Figure 1 (spheres, rainbow, N blue to C red):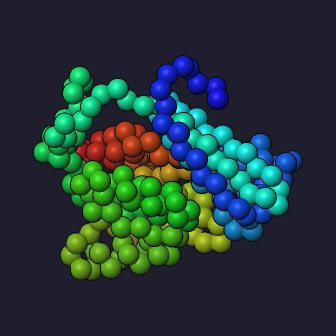
Figure 2: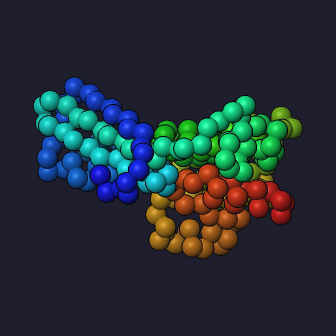
Length: 227
């Protein structure tokens, strides 16, 4: 493992499925690499990014026809937790010390794992999060919320939706429905023109994928504060 010396927590995941062919096993962590008819191939890329962000490493061993093993190493902390407070450091885990967000947020993304990740991040931070798998569903939820008198405070829209309405068209429709909509655009393609010129399309900010909690929450809080 390409890691510095030290103590690590090792997690091993083993299946007895078909395995991964040797000619593609080294590509499985690449963003948007997939062998499936449907899907964007972001799942393992997100897992790799999150683990690396925490100072760890993920490796794979596979034999076609026999199964696959994923090995994850994460740095082990020497600190002890007592009553929700980290001894030897300044971080506290008590609920009352957390700075929670407020607001009703709509997340539109066609990748279930990414959608659920954003949902968990926002819910854990105090937001009321609701998800949609494509633009049509997002528009229905937004319209319903407006008519019920409980509108969304912000919307996060993925640019590319396989087989459905993506972020650009959804934003056009949202602006017709609500000219004051506060929307953030999201994509795994950092070079996408819409990410660079988001204001031209009516968005307030751009959030890259995979999501990092501090980036997503920081951008959202900044825009909600401005509003």
